[in-house]
Image 1 (tube, rainbow, N blue to C red):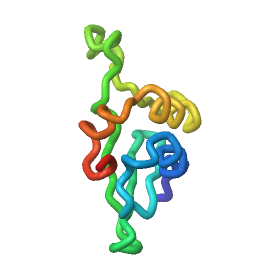
Image 2: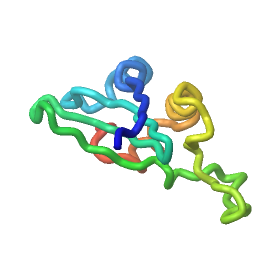
Image 3: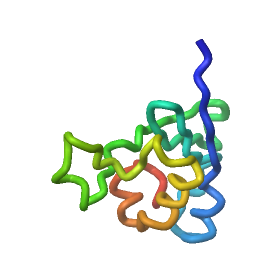
Amino acid sequence: MNKTYYKKDVLKPLRKKYPEAINPQLASLVILQTEDNLYLEKSYKSEPGKFYSTAMDFIAEDEFIELEPIISASMFNTGLSLEENVDKFLNELDKETIDYCFDDIII
């Protein structure tokens, strides 16, 4: 069974936004969206063809935390388009939050 997924590069925009802070060993950094979840997928120059994925559903929007389990408090949502989720990642997460939530992106 084939799953449909979409992905979009976020490494170039992050390097532009934080030119001195992004790990120079990263070869790629994409947000991958399936029907069920979103992932931040990274690869390293030293390991071509090997990818590391982290589900993004653990990052919550503060104003929705009290409403769980009625609705999901996850900031990243498959009900949104990939572009909307990418925009949230690039414009609503600051450098410190990215560093706290995801290993080895910020140096």
